[in-house]
Image (cartoon, rainbow over all chains, first blue to last red; front, side, top):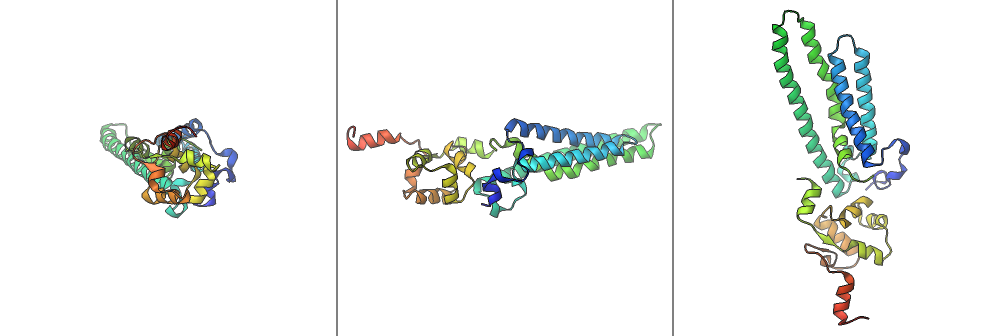
Length: 158
Length: 91
């Protein structure tokens, strides 16, 4: 077990790391809201700055989530003990299921929304393109940090 | 099923708190000796995590005890009552 994991109280950014379970869960909720903000902002016309802000916020909160679980989600087996490996693997399974659910909901939503938009007389092609493109910026932070978010949500201790 | 709920369904009982107290070991000391994260010792002591066979043997070897003296699938009797029964009365 590496010193980074066995001595978690000696990380460089200790002050920024959420210690209590409640504060970790607040960061997880904020991360989820940032993802939603990114998707909504992406669907709005002429809101690139808000979209960028949403992406940056989601990435920033994702980094805080990684700190909060000592990057457990990203470390190889050699640097974890058997309990942490089991926790990490369970978190990855849940994260995979969550991401798959979100992506399927997005795909089904688009599949239903696009024909409706096409039938509308006032809809332009750019509306459909924008709606499709809106969901894409939300995917990378979701894929990158959901395992850490699951771990942060579940973990009882520091 | 999560690790915690599985552990709750099939608990492995242990005497780690007593053994640590007898030897005045901190969780960190024991964790470093057997090569796990210090919180894992806490999880074991609270019955929230069942160790692998390899870890159970490492811990037992560290205390120089047979594995069944440290871990059991049945609740342990309090150490005081075990000692009292063996001596047939108070010391």
